[in-house]
Length: 295
Image 1 (cartoon, rainbow, N blue to C red):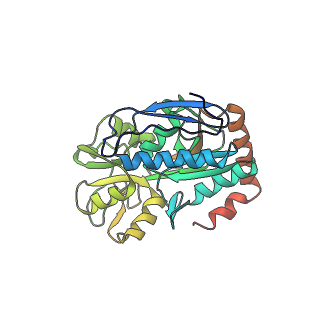
Image 2 (image 1 turned 60 degrees about the vertical axis):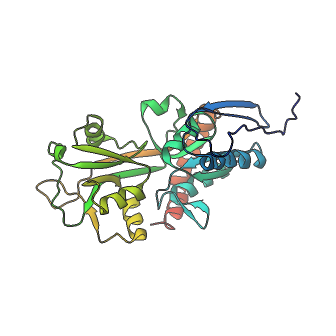
Image 3 (image 1 turned 90 degrees about the horizontal axis):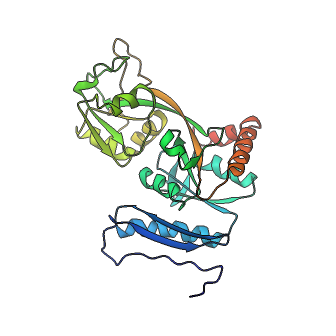
């Protein structure tokens, strides 16, 4: 069978089929043939959304990059059906200065990681560094964001965390699937020092489960959780967990996050150029101008 250079072929299962098995996606771009297989999980609707991302990128041309990220306002969120936010706008502006257009799609974080790992997306916005991700992602020298991680509890609950987290064994903690928290809190999670861990898909679920007492606290980025809780109507119902012996919220960790690029589709030179351009944007005031829209 012969195929023209502008063809695209995607094989999907019949309607109603669960996507627990490996899904094979074969598509042709203007640059080369890509063949990917990955265990995405979920249902047919979720697969069709991913296929839509691929088709949009294909139709837009070789100079268009596909980026994925999570719902995490004010850094990344959906407004009137479009992806926006502080980090989304900065990433788009940086790529635009480099001569690229971009499509940014907000999906669950774990699925976003799978897509960049398998070359179904060119980059992921807001990714913290870890060695596992570095196996399939190129990280620029310049971060796009610095996240401040706090634990959140129901207002009035008498919960504190010791500085060394030695007292957390009596608490059930909510965490988000695929997140990297860093610092002592990540170590405590990895070593299962909490009474129980409940993993959820996104920040909204963490807030809802906290309110209905499914766990004692959850970990989230300060600006994101304050923004989301206000939108959800729970701003007066939750608060940050203080350090034992103080009344100050306990900053559990802070971590740099990046626009990280898939090794399947991007090059080191491209990532180096992105880092240089982003650094220039920090110096010339572009970043501050964008931030004023969201803070």
